[in-house]
Amino acid sequence: MTRRRAALLLVRTSLLVLLLAGLALPPGVEAQLAVSSNDNKVMLDNGVVKVVPNPAPDTATIIDLGVTPPRVVAEIPVPGSVVGPPMSVAITPDQGLALISAAMKVDPADPTKQVPNNRLSVVDLRASPPAIIATLETGKGPAGLSINRQGTLALVANRSEGTVSVFTIQGKTVAAAGSVRVGDEKSGPSQVGITPDGRTALVTRDGDNFISVLSIDGAKVELTKRDMSAGMRPYGLDISADGSVAVVANIGRGNGDSDTVSVIDLKAQPPRVVETVVVGQTPEGIVLSPDGRLCAVVVMNGSNKPKESPFFAPNGKLLLYRVDGTKLVPAAAAWIGRWSQGIAFSADSRTILVQNMVERDIQVLRWDGNTLQDTGHRIKTNGGPAAIRTAPRP
Image (tube, rainbow, N blue to C red; front, side, top):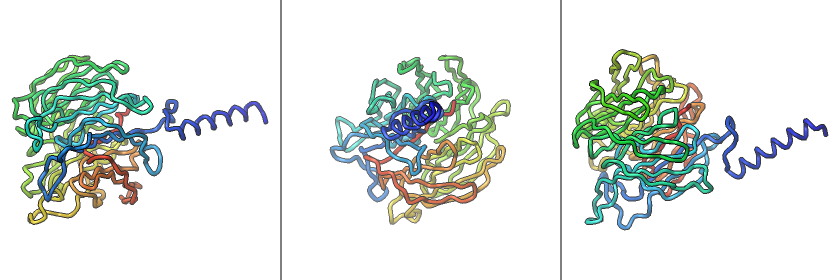
C-alpha cells in the first residue's frame, strides 16, 4: 500500500468513526442540525388546549438532517412552549449553540392554568450530550427569536410585554444587551427576523396587526418609524437567504375563515407588502427554503377545532409555493397531522420536516423539484413538538 493510499484510508476511517459516534465533523462535512422544542405542559382535548396535570419536563430534540432518513442525535430537558409562532428556537450559524425561549409556564398558584414565563435557555450543541449552559431572563412571554448570520446577536419577541429583547453572542457566552419597545402590552410581538446583512429586523405584532421595522448597528437596536400592514394578526415570519423578500403568515381570528400569507419586498425603499395569497385556516408555520425557491406553509385547516365544529378537519396541510420574484405560485400540497406547528428544510431544500403536536411526532416529506411526497418516516418526540429551526447559512 502506498503512503498516499494509506493516508486516504486513515481519513475515511476517521470520518466513519466520527459519524458513527455522532460527533461534530470538520467544516464542510458536519451534520446539519435541526432543533425541535417540545411542550409537555399542554394537550389538545377536542379543540380545547388544557394544562396537563403534573406534566413531565419539556424537551428539546436535536436531529441530524444531513442523513436519510433524518435521525435523532440527542434529546434533553429544556423549557419551551407551544404558545407563539413555532420559531421559538434559533441556532448559531456554526451550530454550536441553540437558544430556546419559553413563553409560558404552569401557574404556581393554579396548576390548571399557564402564565407568561421569561426564560431563554442556552444549549451547548457540541457538548456530549448537549446541555443547558445558561438560563437568561427576557421580557414577559418570550416567543419567536432569531440569530443574525454573523452569529453575534440574537433578538427575542416578548409577546406579553410589547418588547424585543437584545442579546449579544461571543463564543459560548450569551449576554443581555437591553430591549426595544415596539408597542404596548397588547401589541403581541410574535416573531422577529433579521436580514442577512444584520442591519435590519422585522417584528410581527399579532395583537395590533402591524409589522415593525428595527434598525441594527452592532448591539444597538432601535425602532424605526416604518410599520407595515400585511393582514389580520401577522404571526410567523421568515426572510430569504439573499435578503430580497420576507414572508409573513397572517393567522386571522381562528373563526373558520380562510387566512393569508403576505410577501414583503425588502429591496424596495422603504420595504413594503406587495403580495398576499389565501392559504386556508390558520397558517401556523412558515419558512423559505435555503435555495430561496420555495415557501412552505403549515395550515392547521381546522384540525385544532372541536370535532362538532363545522370548520373541523381531521388533518392539516403542508403547502408549497414557488417563489417567483415577489410572487407566490402554488406548487404542491400534502396532508399532515393535527395542530401542526413548525417546518424545517434540509440544506439542499429537498427534505422537509413538519411538527405534529397531537401525534407528538415530526413528519418527514420529500420534494424532488416537482412532486411533494410523504416518506412515511416519523420522528417521535418526548413532548408535543412546538417549534423547530435550523441554523442560518453564514
